[in-house]
Image 1 (spheres, one colour):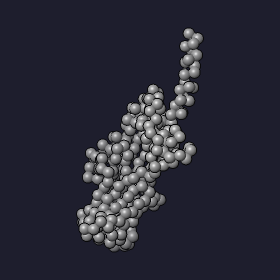
Image 2 (cartoon, helix red, strand yellow):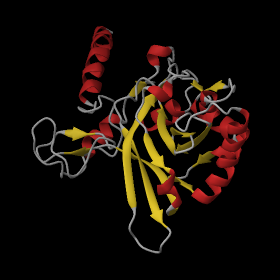
Image 3 (cartoon, one colour):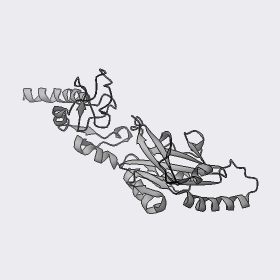
Image 4 (cartoon, helix red, strand yellow):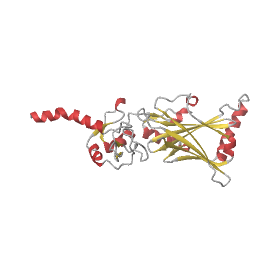
Length: 282
């Protein structure tokens, strides 16, 4: 009995120490298999490991193989949900943790279309994606790696709206925003928002990644590629940072303090179509 009590006494401190060693040194999250290591043995989670990068701990190349013994050890423990501080008390084995966090009821997301209209829906990540598919069908894209815009169709739809607005208000200037549109791209468990602001001279495009406070370390950029309509491969590419916004950061002034790309109408008229996609910064 004495030995059993002693084992119980030391179990939690030892487990805590082991779990701490099983955290990725870069993102500090528990490492999910596959786990890779640098040439000197420092291990990284699959999301942070890059084969052409130098180890942040020793500077050696991250060109080593899999750390199979850590992959086996990490599956022995249960880990708390990353929304623990928001009230979730669920613990899961590492192989089930991400699936739980993806649908965790604790982290709530406002409908991204509420940035421009009066949609007040709030749900967890999966519920919000389903809501957007159901309620904002024509402007929600799930599983697409990129959004493709055809300028000719874009002009017909938006210029008509702009002309109607101009007829109602003769005091508007060329730089005044006359029409706004929003698109949502859901890729895996990431929700990206593309906002377009139209005036008589150009389109201003802003993008956001809706994320929890625990995912702000990941940075993305949006890439706009213009494909000419003259049969050549002379593509033009624009890049800009994709901003992160959390569940409590939606406001009417988002467009004034975020990165954006301004596309002149003359550039749009010369291209057959253009794509908007998102890439994780390394």
